[in-house]
Amino acid sequence: MYHFEKKIIDAFISRCLAYTGKTGRSAVRLRSVSVYPEFDAVSPDEKESYLEAAEALERKGILSLNWEKRGKGERLKTLTCVNIEKLFEEAGGKDPKAEAEAIRVMLRNNIPRLEKMLSNAGSEAGNSPSADAASALSFLHHWLDRLDSADTRRGVDFKTAEDIVRLMEIFLEPEKRANISTRALSVLLYRDSKRLEYLLGLRGPFLSQTSKGGVPHPVFSRLKRSLPETMITGKLIFEYRDKEEDAKQPMINAGGLMLGFPLPTAARIQNIRTLYPQAMPTVLTIENKETFYAISDPQKYGYDCCLYSGGYPNQAAAALIKVLAASGFCFYHAGDLDPDGILILQNIADIAEKPVLPLRMDAATFDRYLPWARPLSAVMLGQIKRIRKVTREIPALADLIRRIEETCRGVEQEIIDYRL
Image (tube, rainbow, N blue to C red):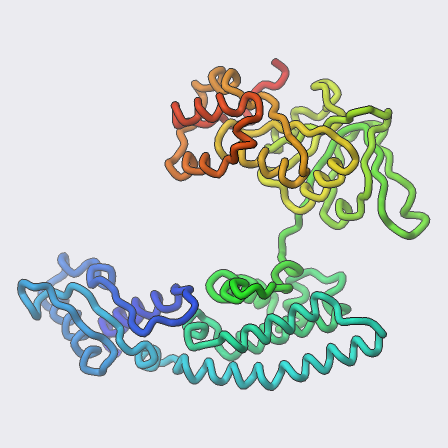
């Protein structure tokens, strides 16, 4: 294949693979300047070679050319791919329609096998199928119904489809994914430590399409490589929901030490109470880690405990927020004095399902640190519209929002001295 033909074909394939719509386009149009931006700067021979390559692809029935009104035959305006299947064939790839049909056949052959596995497992255990297993099969059925050649253009070839089926199969065999890291599972399934990461990455350009039909992706919620954890400090007693007698013993943090809780541990906590009973115990959630470390003794600041939210709370932080709320704690929050900082406070209130009051998130603090404030982009300022009316009505926040809008600046929490 000539250099310029390959250049043009690669540009169109890149656009086709990036497209994430419900179905594939029958035609894809590109501006000539985006295909060959150096056109004006190259020699006449190079220009001629590029134009000849485009015309050759037009003769093959792959492209339709649109010339600029002046100098027809000398300067292209747009190139339109009118036959995407031929485009892939010209590039040496498989026909997307044939590939999609092969995948459909493979799914039709495998789904009954997996349904039988699920039925047998349920009969042996004497109970109904697990939610994860049923969800995996629902996903495969939904995928079979919606699969078309556009999916293969997004990078889902036959081997990838087989690997996705194998991945769904482990939800019918829960023992195979218990107590194993994601990369170790990838080696077990595919003899490739990175393969599972690639499959999980398909949720953006491809698998997200199925979620629009209301079908969950069990694999994504169970096999993420993220390891959420949070920290809390304060003289607290943690009670667990475990059935085993040994695990029913509460954990007492009599020294008020800073404790780290990964999600599996945070999820087991049933109740949190102060070492010395309080009628209305208080928790200060803190957005940034540096400030959380600085306020290591919450009692000095008038609170019973401090919880590190790490920006928007991850699953571990959210789990502790829910337990603290159910345990009767009153919430306060310290964060950045910018739209995101206010939205994080709002998010914590949503998780706790109770009011959250701001600490030093007010116009006076903003003005005190305004000389060291950072400029905010239009995108960041646009986040203000996401702040709901109930949040705007919290004392001090209305004036803070006004000052942010007036100055187009934000104050980072780390520069605030909370001892003042």
